Image (spheres, one colour):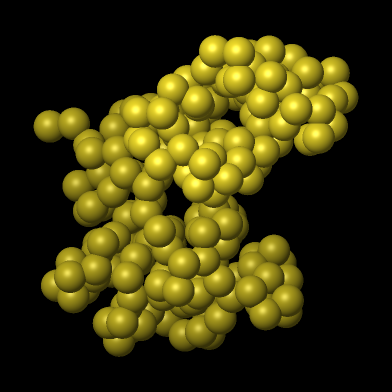
Length: 211
């Protein structure tokens, strides 16, 4: 069956990565965009993970994996080079009711991490249900040429307008009409050309008042 796409809120939730190599580091850096509670379990880690520990961004447990390391976790990722250990982590996490991902093992995973393109608050995730991560990365790179940093800037501006619009337009249908009247591509082109936030807000007011 198909995987169910979902965005998880990880803020204030404990996440554990078992493993200290380059794959583990990639997982750690991805999680750190979403929470400050990342624990790495591994006797040895990459210089990158060590640097993150020095900055106080991760907790490093310098031990071989034990079942107690995942007991209070919300999310667990197994990314060691030991297949048997990865499977053990998966079994322990599932027994604990914790969602788990095992690098390169769809059967041992409750979720699959997609290839992600981020432009500020815009998140575009490309998944292949674990069948071809390389193809997912290729598609993500292609999308990167289509969606520039102006998308993130526009989302910040539109997000800042929402509280005012909600106060001014109580009716849900009126609010929908307001936002639907915004010509996003026009504003994106303006931002790409160097327009300021003030200019974009003014143009939004012009477009919506005349709609």
